[in-house]
Image (cartoon, rainbow, N blue to C red):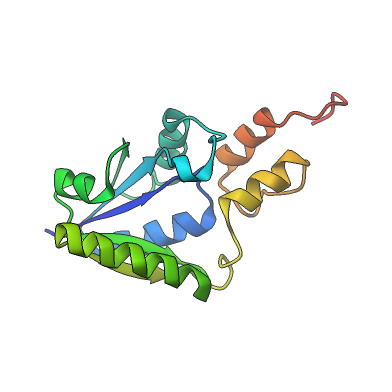
Length: 164
């Protein structure tokens, strides 16, 4: 049985993340999706518990996906969950530089290889940071995120004029 770990902040999870999870779930026996509190990304919009719930709802159609949270090194979590590989999504070429460096470091300290899954062109522009910004100003993000995420974003950024 091959298990992979897909770590990320998922603040919030969007359709590009879901695409990577779906591809990984077809390729591997088990996919462990792990939400992390990443201090390098500033204060998160959603709590770890909210993110875990949103990920669970967004991946409920996949029988071989397990969700967890962590606040340790990714490689330590990979060992803990018995991951054979770490999975990372790539949107654009610029992602590759930082992801490759991280993959090489993870390999050096743990021996665990990282596999890259490119996102489809229809999701390459998606980034949680940009989705939060659009939602903050009440733009339409409904085609970018699962319905539960869109609903929670509306609750986080209510309109000041009383309309929805």
